[in-house]
Amino acid sequence: MNVPGFSTQALIEFHEKIRICLDKDDRNPSQEKVYGVRSFNDWREFADSVETELSQRNVPFESVKW
Image (spheres, rainbow, N blue to C red):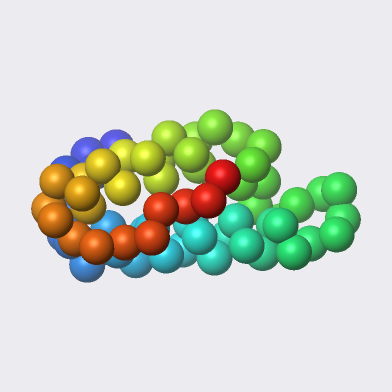
């Protein structure tokens, strides 16, 4: 995915949605998680890419707590 090609606002929103999905999965007591954020490496790889790009743009954010 071309993360650098996204607008700063899109990156901020992607980052927030990742955090929301992770929180929903963590709050779900069921073994079967809705999003599978911790089950699939793609989530973390994408979050890392977004955070790297936000850092390069000097945009403040709170890192995803894995």
